[in-house]
Image (cartoon, rainbow, N blue to C red; front, side):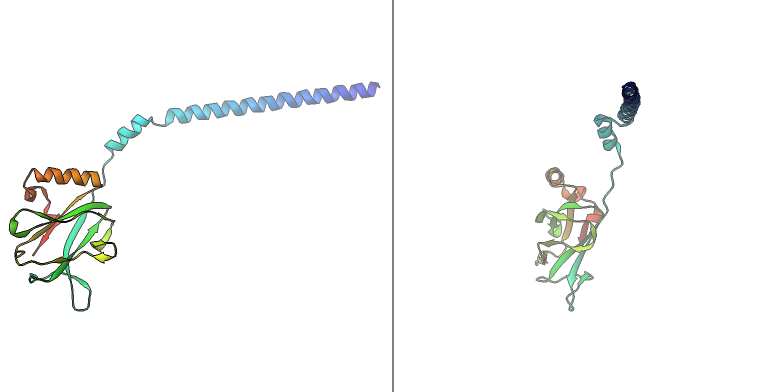
Length: 185
């Protein structure tokens, strides 16, 4: 029986030793977890700082180019190289570095602008023909279009485009549209 007691006491000592070491390991792990959480919290910017930094970040300026194109006899779109006759159809080829929303206006003979299409989304890419769905947008030349100028007004989203168009109505549109956004013949 003395042997049983000594074995029992030895087992209890062994259990206490294991309990002490596992408790110590748990405490060290919890302390490391809390310290790492505190460091992450201190090093991460607050939501306010993130917003201020986002507002001060340099904006990527979109580059845009527009060409007037016409289908040749082979059915390919080629850059317009002469004044189109009344009744001929032209389209517009656009290259953009960022996605844009756009409105195309026409200024026939420098008169009041007319909207040809409004708020179409232009994906980024080169030499894309403006289209609605699966059909290329085509403009039929009118007799009074002898000195027509076509301009693309662009913005990052629909709301900004609407604001830009409203601001343009208050001014002469010719003064507010960059020349690189316009084509004529």
